Amino acid sequence: MPATMPTLTLRGPGDVALIDKPVPEPGPGEVLLAVEATTICGTDLRIISGEKTSGVRPGATLGHEVAGRIAALGEGVGESAGGAELKVGRQATVSIVVSCGCCRACLSDREQLCSRLELVGYSIDGGLAPYLLVPARAVARGNVIASPDELPANRLALSEPLSCVLNGHHGHGGVNPGETVVVIGGGPIGLLHTELGLACGAARVILCDKHESRREVARGLGAVGVGPDELAGTVEELTGGWGADVVVVAIGRTELAETSLDLAAPGGRVSWFAGFPKGSQSQLTPNTVHYQELTVSGGSNARRADVHTAVRMLAGGVIDETPIVTHTFGLSQWREAIDAVRSHLGIKIAIDPTR
Ligand SMILES: [Zn+2]
Ligand SMILES: [Zn+2]
Image 1: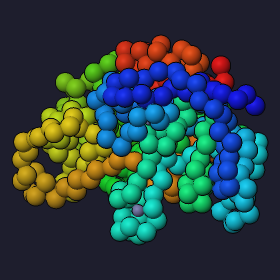
Image 2: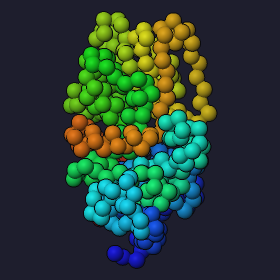
Image 3: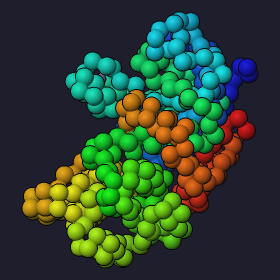
Image 4: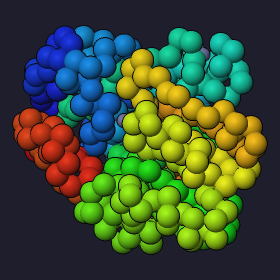
């Protein structure tokens, strides 16, 4: 093992660079993962541009969608029941939500809203580096999650975004067989909602995106791909005027708050899954919710249980990563990788820190 490693580190708001740090040695209770792939998400872009600063520690290594392999175990790991699966050489991912376990949110099955929450890739060093050290308190909480089978690293890395999608899915009550789902936004998150909805037996998923290339990807997954101008008409036509049972907003545009309510069927569920711009406000027609008896839910982040579910779904081949993770770059090419995300080249970009 080399003594130092390059890490994509946040030096200050909007200031990111490849910085050498020592390769960590796992102390008691800690786990060292060798990173095989880390995919980049919109939040990384907002951190890198300086738009997002809360919860991000200057000096932290970025990267929170991580597929790795256990490289070394600190003393005592594996002796507890929860650590039995942790063996050197095993593929694993990390649930990035490091929660306290005893606040009111943690005790009510919402650890992702923990009042003492810390996130890997935000305040704890993340996966845009060849190695990631999982702190003992996270290992003890079961945040290192081994994969049941050998998976392509780019697939296992999707366990983080998929876990968030699963959390949003629980929030809106899930998709029942035969229902119509509308997904607004054809980025990686929208496409994961699409795959999940179809896996749950939705009669149809209608995905709306302004880019034909993304509508085409959605059609390849079995969805109906439409542009913004055709959305309302298509929902009306395909549901006989009833509306969509589930509407997922997977793009953070404020006006979609109202649009999503209008698309929902009586008794429908609306998920505002995407984060909206900071401070944004919206004018809504509250009677749409009242008379149509709609349920509106949010979703941000995920529980460890959602990561477990995500890993099982990815291992079982329920979710196909190949249309979603379209490009892989080496860590030294991080600027190109970020530009590729910004310019919408492909859908999702992975970084392989071993090259
Ligand atoms: Zn993310
Ligand atoms: Zn807590």
